[in-house]
Amino acid sequence: MTDVCTNTEVFAFMGSPADVITNQGAQITALIGEQQALFEQITGRKVGSTAFSEVFFYDGYNCDIIGKKMFLKGIYRDLLTVTEILEDGTALAVATSTSSNGYALDLTLGIINRVNAEFLKSDMAYKITGTCGIATEDVKAIIIEMVASKSGLWKSNVQTSEGDIQTIRTQISTDTKDRMQRYILRDV
Image (cartoon, rainbow, N blue to C red; front, side):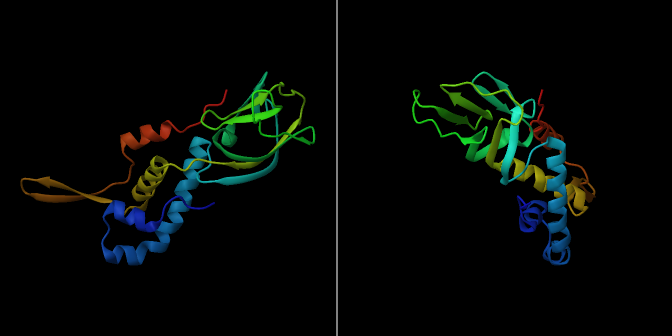
């Protein structure tokens, strides 16, 4: 797994002084991987680009098939590329027109459309090779805040009429929690 952010970005977000950056760099780097894994566990999605090879797809397993549409599920919902689709061992081609026989991808919705044929519903009918994952600036910002709150190094100042009070933030904001909720997969 490749980390979606760097410790430099986390320290910049927290406004950490140079001595903290020097002393805590390795720990923050380790925490990035742990919090990214937690994000993946909570949401059911892979962060970044994850390659997969010859994974089986059939109705009810990694997808739902309805006629000419294969609705991808789980981590495969975030399909980025397809290098090969095998249908009972025979490679399908990318459809070049509405009259050709093959498939077309809808990466936004996580759907593979079959052109001029219906998908087979037999077990283990399809093997797909490609990449999947999400890598948006919003996901990166969520993970940076998760790392900052978990680190115990994220401080903020509260100004009062008698002076400043320094507090340590140990929770992500409600807004960030709400944004993370939007990434949770709810496959039916």
